[in-house]
Amino acid sequence: MTALFAICDDQWALVRTASSPMGLKASTGKTYSNAALASVEDLRANYVLVIDQGTKPDQEWQTVFGNPTVIIDGDPEQPETMTAALQYNVQPISLDAAKAKLESKVKDYKFQRMSGGITFDVGGTAYVVQTDERSLALLDRITERAKANQLENGQIVRMADNSSPLLTQQQILDLNLAVCSMLCACTDAQTEREYAIDALPDDLQAHIEFDCTAGFPAFPEATTE
Image (cartoon, rainbow, N blue to C red):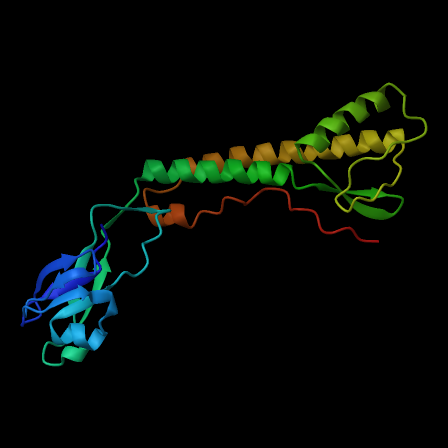
């Protein structure tokens, strides 16, 4: 259980901690039926400090292990300055774990970008065509029909702004090529980033500062007239 109160002796050395405010007994002999209801000043007068829980350290690049240590700080000659706080024990993650984390981030970003759409011009207007999984599956079917010359009257595709411009068969084919080019560029960028991760020096900071998004195609801008 988390330590909530630090019980000190008259020299402000930590004697023990308490994880509950109920029935807390100070080194002076005073017993609190519920220390949570006592003032900080009254607790301090009996060498009891409320422990500052702080914020648990971020664990993206480090691991928190064991129980936190209670640190007593301040000037014993000035009791009002005495404080207690938790100090967490941390250790950096291994370089292998860091590389695996980066590779996972690159992979996630690749799929995020792949599904992020592509800008395509239709009649002088730039539209953002959706490229999420369902939209790509629909585009594949539409492209097959265009290749078979079955879309003489044109076809609409899924746009990010829900607009519905009519695309000719040739525009469908051109759009499919543009989408395929974007998807391939994302895969190539992932491969390049993975090689770059492997080439990183044996330094955790270099891994922390590594840009997982470099080399990927830019996301499309909003639809413009």
